[in-house]
Image (cartoon, rainbow, N blue to C red; front, side):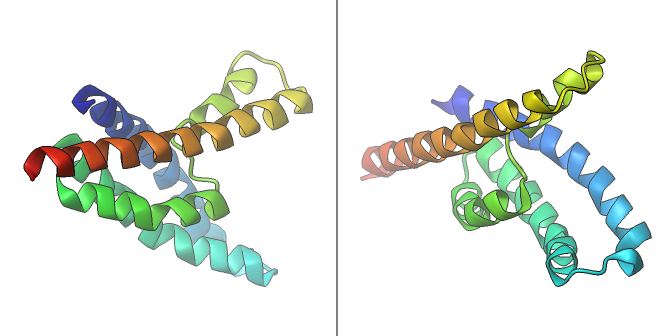
Length: 133
């Protein structure tokens, strides 16, 4: 299970790379956002980046802060579309296939994958608590 948590931390590192590109775009274009929801999402991306960074560190070294930050992140991950497997939605574009049907399929896979990750994280967290008692 420790390897599984470290693989989650590695997936979060990949997410951090893509999030940093999004944050740069938000900084450059924030004045062009017209909808309130766009502005809220733009503002929430910055603390989300820090939460993912702290969570990555905590999960890699199996610290309590990693679990806590992931539990806090989870609803915001769904709202902001910051998925552990989110990079798979870019595969069709990387292969030159710009058909819109692939995004919706892979997006659903990412969504389900995030719930599977939550389940496995909670399960491992309970195992750690049982071992420490």
